[in-house]
Length: 284
Ligand code: NAP
View 1 (cartoon, rainbow, N blue to C red):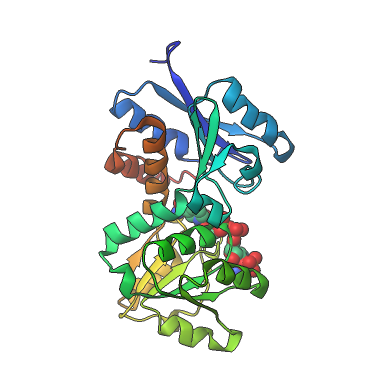
View 2 (tube, rainbow, N blue to C red):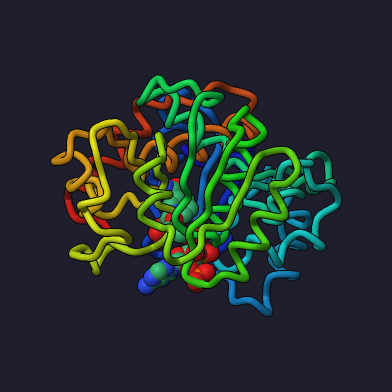
């Protein structure tokens, strides 16, 4: 029940109407009897400073931040945690008595889900990353923070790949892959991660690399969760590889934000089932 004590959290993005976050968080609040409500706010880019001021004015407990505000919000906050600062993007804000603190739970959510679902030892992986956008930055910075030692980056535009590589060095052995060396970099990877949007709904017949490069000695991970099984993951499964989809990352980035706001442990399984059943119904 919403009362005069109910605490408000929400999502700042543009667009936001496709988001599964309100359903996932409100289901979790109800399960734990927490007096919170989560709403989605469609905030145009030039309204972002007003929306951030509204977090303070309304005494909101915090927000999630999504496209296109993850980078633009940094200078509007009072404090940004070191990992989010390195990634250069914030996806979660906590309001501590008027001080707005920015975090990035995308990378940690990804790593938690990857380790839980595949039981891999991060320190032993040769990682090849497809893509060098915002999600790639969060995932790669967190992988290195959590012990990955070698990363190869394949990206359509070389400049962005070089930028990501310099962000990660010298903490790890990082190289941008030359166009003629992509096959070798994919085949030699023990962990192949797709962070590009290639294969995402509605372009579900596409995949970022040829299926022939995949093999059974690999873990193949895709950040995309719509569709639940991308063409890349279907081909990887056919080749005998272990696969990991994007839903776990979405659930855990939300679970980490949930705990930052409420100090409670999130009901992760309920959140996962809530999102899965919505996606299976075709909730885009
Ligand atoms: P972004 O910053 O726009 O980056 C997009 C990346 O995809 C860039 O590396 C881009 O290459 C590449 N790309 C796009 N179209 C391409 C094409 N036709 N051919 C080759 N490369 C292409 O987006 P993002 O925020 O990082 O998101 C990337 C993906 O991750 C999306 O599918 C998103 O749904 C997913 N994601 C999932 C979660 C989750 O919770 N599971 C969270 C965040 C993101 P260029 O640099 O050359 O443009």
